[in-house]
Image 1 (cartoon, rainbow, N blue to C red):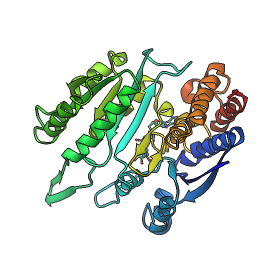
Image 2 (image 1 turned 90 degrees about the vertical axis):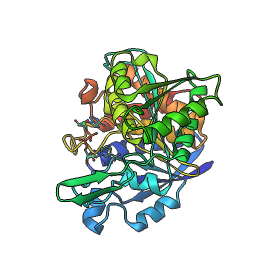
Image 3 (image 1 turned 60 degrees about the horizontal axis):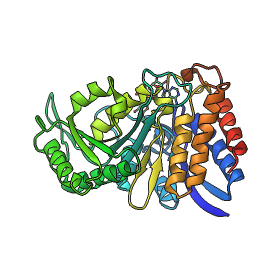
Amino acid sequence: MKNYKISIIRGDGIGPEVISATERIIEAVEEKFSLKFEKILVEAGLEAYKKYGTNLPDFSLEKIKHSDCLLKGPTTSLEGEGTELGVPVKIRKYFDLYANLRPLKNFPRINSIFKGVDLLIVRENTEGMYSGLEYKISEGTNIGIRVATKRGAERIINVAFKLARERKERVTLGHKSNVLKMTDGLYKDVFEKVSKNYPDVEAKEEHIDALAMKLVMRPQDYDVIVLENLYGDIISDLAAGLVGGLGMAPSANIGENFAMFEPIHGSAPDIAGKNIANPIASILSFSMCLDWLGEKNASHVVEDAVINSLKRGDKLTLDLGGSSTTHELAESIANEILSISV
Ligand code: NAD
């Protein structure tokens, strides 16, 4: 029996619903494999802010530090001048989780404009426009500082090339170095240098605006796309829209020694508390967590169970064209996990 300590932030809005659905999947994985997950519940997000005056109290951070990895539900951000950074941004910075991996592909029965889409967005997670460096310099004039470092660019671009070797061996860098000559120019220079170490991988660069247009016309042409922080955030939501919406979009935030797994979507206040949110993004994030822990077989079984459940198609949530609840869909995936022969 292998034991893991998994810290869990249930989050705000639909967070507690999709995470409790994912906890059902954790139970099914425990039952199927010789694995045990000790769950450490961590308070963070808007509810924590209301109780403690901060969205990520020190005692929550301590709990996360003493776990092997973190499963995070979406948290509602505080908005407006002077408010704290969001929980995921704080955690990414604190643990230096520099690689945000966002796989976006077609799944059976999911309505989408294109077939044959299989993208991996590799988003730099610690610098760029999300560095938290925003200032008021005079009344009516605010500035934000965009950080680009050689170290940051090198490590994320290397991740992209390494992952491309396990896929279709194609990497595209999206940038705007014709305008942002210092910051995106640095990413472009590093990309050109690093690509020489991977002669087996096709390397392409495109301006981010042209890339956005091409993605909505021929997304099948792309494999791994490496992007700085803000571009990665926007382009991955766009790509989620190409494959059936945010309910199908998982992510991993990976550093050298720790990792956080969370759906790409937010707390979706418009559908919170109704038990209708799609839990698949969160369940697939747990599958990415299993993969990172080295539990490759269990990770594949969770993804296959999602595919089998979608193929059966009798338990789909509203966004997928059905009328089942969050927990009915999770139960269907859990049953598939238990029935797959390994
Ligand atoms: P959102 O992702 O919460 O919602 C966008 C749209 O997608 C909504 O119509 C919503 O109903 C739908 N949607 C999202 N997830 C879904 C699911 N699982 N199933 C079905 N439909 C789903 O984005 P938003 O409205 O811009 O943000 C709401 C809050 O979430 C904000 O406070 C934002 O800052 C926060 N947020 C948090 C994270 C995070 O914690 N990582 C990420 C993005 C946004």
